[in-house]
Length: 220
Image 1 (cartoon, helix red, strand yellow):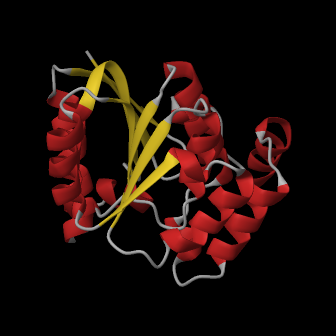
Image 2 (cartoon, rainbow, N blue to C red):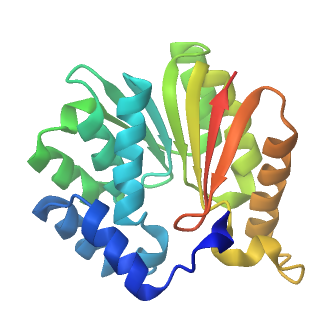
């Protein structure tokens, strides 16, 4: 459990030293994102990007769905892990921030694997279900507005193949989920999803006490 080892600053630095495999392009995109308003808080940490790439490889994914692109750091990490003919459909509400990532995808040579969809995510997911059919994705990464987390989860489960994996970010939401005084809509949305997942017999799950909380959900 999480209380077996205290995550001190020195220990976290050691973990990064011995486990993170980084490169100039990833660092540049992180630094570019950090300069944006709210960029540091909204961007996945480097270790999480590496974990996402590992999970794409472990699942043998050829079709990945990402709900929430922002500047495309996680997109880049997962697209790199796909085979040459793989596809990553990434959804965002506006073009402004994904346009930053698109330049990095192109520089890395993985832009042909990324299918960027701009618009309301719920509507995009409905369109994907009609377009590609159910059980058409191998892995889904959910990292968008928290108020709609339950809706995104249900749509993702319909789009995911049996044995496929959903990765949900921010499931501890800066610790607010454990604070009874935190009653804002986004915290409530994360709490609602956590309850749904815990009680859902259709899936297996594990909440990792990493970054801001990462929940792995495997469809039975």
